[in-house]
Image (tube, rainbow, N blue to C red; front, side, top):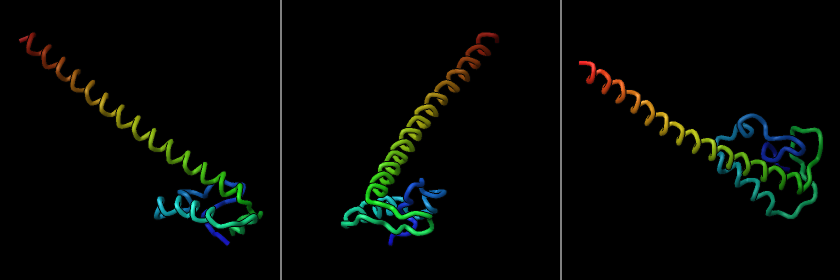
Length: 101
């Protein structure tokens, strides 16, 4: 039995099942898949799982992690560019004021 790690036929519940240790949550999938099994009793759900359910979910979680990293990087790059643009606008306004006086 493996409760609140793999959710056969479902995506993980909100906030990765309210995981307080996300790297540990991800590692638990790999640890579970290191055991030989055909049937998974995951708890809280209406159906039994299979090894493939575990594989599918770890792929989903890894895709989710990759997407979060990419989005964070894009946001960071956008923030840097936005700050540069704001600085250029401020500089332009300062130059305009200087030229008007």
